[in-house]
Image 1: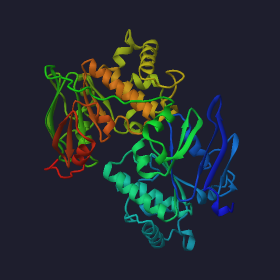
Image 2: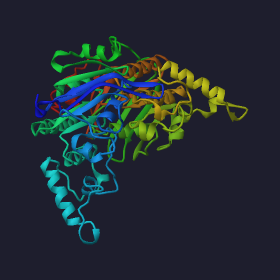
Image 3: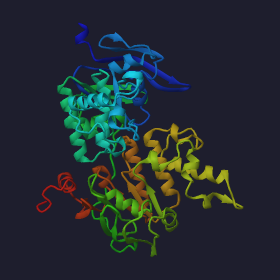
Image 4: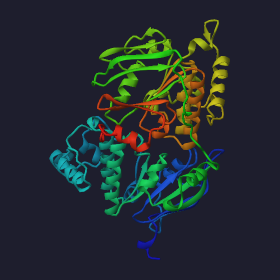
Length: 502
C-alpha cells in the first residue's frame, strides 16, 4: 500500500492511564481519506482522551498512532502536529478582544520593518484565507461580535491555514439552532469536496446519520465497534454505546393536570429584545417552550428565573409576584433553574460537588447558625445517588467530572431547594444518551411530586416529556401543541415554515 493510500490516521492498541484510572484500554480508530467519521460514546467512554492523543496533547502509554502511514511526530513539535490535524472544540478558543484577522494569525503575524506588525498585509491575508474557505466575515471585525456559528467557521479557517486537511469537530452543534446546524453541515460537506477529512463527535445521534459515513463507538475506555453508518441503525448504535437498550421518557397520553392549582403565572412578560410570553403552569404540569436561536425562548426563560430584567410584565409564583431581575427573589419563591451554559452559569468548577449542590440552600445545611459539613455531605450524597453522578465522593471538584455528570450536578443544585417551579434551559445539551435518560427521568419524578416544569429547548427528545409545547418564532408564541405532535410539524413551526398551514 502506498503512503497516499494509507489511512489519514490510524491509532492501534492505544492504552492511556491517569494514575489508577484507565482512560483507554487497547482502543483505536482508523479514519480514511475524505470520509466523515463519527466518534460516539457515553461521557467518560474515552473520547476526549483519544482526541488528546490524536492532536498531540498527550502520548499513549501503549500502542501507536500514525498519519498517512508515518509515525506521529514528537509531542514537542507543535508545528508538525498543526500541519497534520486540527481540532475545533465545543468551547471556542477565539479571543473576543481581538479582531478576526488577529485570531486567524495569532502569534504568526506578518511583520515589517522593525518587527512591527504589518496591519494592511495582515488584513489582506486574512481576507484571502476567509474567502478561500467561504467564510463570509469581515477580517477587521471584533471577534466578540461574532455569532457562535461564525466563530466556528473562523476556527475552521484558522485550523486549515496551518495546512491540516484532517479536522476533529468536538460537539460543534451544541450551541446552534436547527438552521445553524444545517448551514454548518453544508459547509462541512463542501470541505469534504475540497479534500478535508472529518472526525465528528456528537451526542446527537441523528446528526451522525445526516453527516457521517462511518462511526466508531467507545464504551468504558474500550473500542466496541466501527461500522458503516448505513449498516448500524439507531437502536443498535445506542446499544453499542450503553451495553443495553435505552429508552427516553415521554409524557403519558392523556396525563391531566387541569384541576391542579396554578403555580406559575407569566403575564405579558416582555424582554429587552421584544420577545413576549404569557402562560399558566399548574402543579405537576410540564410545559415546553420551543424555538430556534432567535425565537426569544431563552430570554423569556431567563427573565422568569430572574437572570435578566424584563422590559415589562409580571411573573407570579405561588401567588407571590417576583421582583424583576432578582435571582434571590426567584429562589426564595421556589424557582429552580438549569441555565443554558453550565460552564458559565451552572457551577463553580474548582469547588466540590457538595459545595455546588448546596450553594443555593445554605439555610438547609446550617446548625446553630453555622454551616454543617455533615449535613452538606448528606445532601450531596443523596443527590449523587438519585442522579447517578459518577464520582468517587462528594468532595470531587466538578471540573473533574464528565459533561453529563456536570449537568447532573447543575440539576441537583436546582432540585436541592425542592422547587415549586423548575425552569430547564436546553437541559440535555452536550450529554450522552444515558445521561439524557437520567436527567429527563429525574424531571418526571419531580413532576410527579407536584412541581411545575418549563422545558426550554429545541431538542425534540427534551420536548417529548411535555404535556404541551408553546412554539416561539421571532419573539412571539405562534402555536401551542398538545401531546401527539409530529417531529415535522414542530420543526416546521420552530423554523417559521408555512405557519398558516401546519
